[in-house]
Image 1 (cartoon, rainbow, N blue to C red):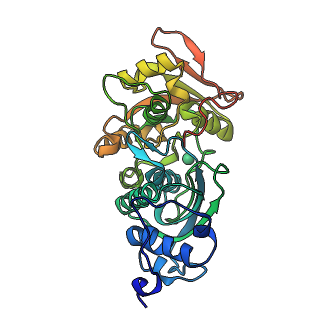
Image 2: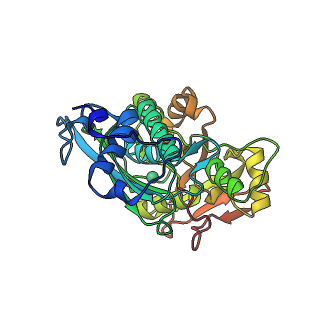
Image 3: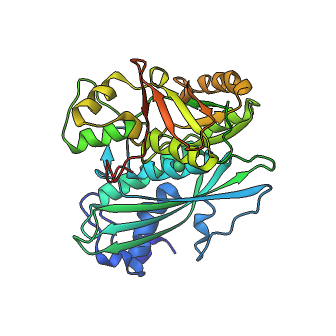
Amino acid sequence: MSSEVKYARRLDLKNGRVDMSHGGGGRAMLQLISELFARPLGNEYLAQGDDGACLPAAQGRLVVSTDSHVVSPLFFPGGDIGSLAVHGTVNDVAVMGATPLYLTAGFILEEGFPLADLARIAVSMARAAQEAGVKLVAGDTKVVEQGKGDGVFITTTGIGILPEGLHLSGNQARPGDVVLLSGSLGDHGVAIMSQRENLSFASAILSDSAALNGLTSAMLASGAVLRVMRDPTRGGLAATLNEIAQQSGVGIHLEEAAIPVKPEVEAACELLGLDPLNIANEGKLIAICAAEDAEKLLAAMRAHPQGAQAAIIGRVVEDASAFVQMKTRFGGRRMVDWLSGEQLPRIC
Ligand code: MG
């Protein structure tokens, strides 16, 4: 039966809005899913149309990660909540050393949200998933009353395959290891904040939101023995390195002069009273490897477009207190601490 027969009218993707019936489990919901989501995002697994997607079992081990996205604004320079919801979860799977294959997505929609915006988000998700080589295999939509949500929230779960023998973990850093960063810090957080604060800078600052699985597979293929990979999202580099220092029971010494930050991001941070080390990134990763493999790994990262600005930014040291410290550009030393509280709410 074609959808034209089943529904008297097509969804009005130009002027229509989400209403309560779109979450009601009836025909309106089916229509929203088939016309707005399945058209850009469909594939053989989503098309099964059952309560769960039936996927072929794979060799190796499974890596599963889940992330909810509540970013505000929904559309920002360099991305939107749809692409971000794909990248964020793909990256969490990829930095485990796994190949991301499948995603599921749960949408919480606010009554009254324009269908045109929702369609734009669905298309953006589809493009991001295609670029990352992952398939959306299951999804869910719920609608909450006007005023009880904020447009759209998206929760994505990613599933990937981890080859036997590969074990990357925050507890693997050892004194003497080298810390690498794939590119400049702070772009995502500053892009969101400048949009939110209505700031305009001489050159637009774009979010770095991107899937990192191409970069991670190039890094793994380099032959360098990786101990840790992690994406410095919420809490930024400072939080990520403190987590690793705690997990491994080591200290980390950074060189401020080696940490790439774009001049326009630095200027925006000064204006907004932010520290680039604490700001969320959505297309960067840190890696820790043995010192003898550092140059090989750095070369592999720089040979990939997403690691062109990669740099060695510090070293792992023995330190029972698990402090992260940084040698400043002026030669002093300062602690790089976790933030207390939330510096930037709804950044991802
Ligand atoms: Mg992460």
